[in-house]
Length: 318
Image 1 (cartoon, rainbow, N blue to C red):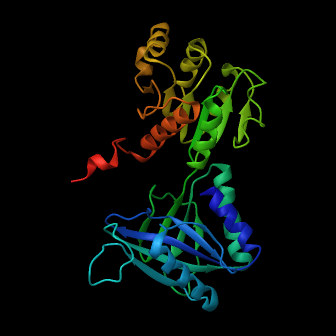
Image 2 (cartoon, rainbow, N blue to C red; image 1 turned 90 degrees about the vertical axis):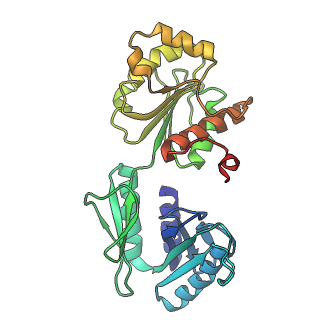
């Protein structure tokens, strides 16, 4: 979401913007509560609330909001019911809130949101669902998920997940790109300065060209941390795991064959701390190339983050 708000700030400097936000859903729908799209005064869009005919309806309504300044609800019916206007057949419905953002007050709010994201602090946007009320930021303790309460939409602004990639070899390069697209803040580490460079990892927020033993103080307080070991050999894994296992990470994954994984485990004393290691890393999709392996790893990261099963969706059909 940081990228979205940065784009919103850029657009606001050029003129008025309509912000479309999914505030409630029922049944099967293409986007989650909190998903956003912005529509600028010159008709450009950024982000998506699901695509298709439903999004086209939102776009047309947004043009009206740009002209009148009047906030609106839009309901997208994806049930496929014969008595409803056909907007899709996903099986559910979505309610979208459209609101005009313009001027210094809106830009100041966006800048506050961006500052909260970049500082790693938690906050929330409160959007009153009234014609004459404006959204505002709060740092009060709030739930982790967006919700409707007291005729307001409460949207937590949590720090984005950070992916620490240990090892800057052939898998790390596509993994950093794919994970960045998937919404992770990227940090890479390797003790080889020729490999750990900003040129090789332009998507990384931080490039650590130093031994693993020297980065503990840098990473130990990072919230929402995920770690992947894609090192050049098992000796590097043996050196890294005792350090990384002390971190409060939501995920630690290690690349390698089953033999390599067993060799690393046998070389470490405290087996209890290795119970949470995902090794070999990634989901079984038959990956062979570095790029395919990176996709496999990122798929497992998303599975852990979102609580998925990893089962093919076609196998879940009735």
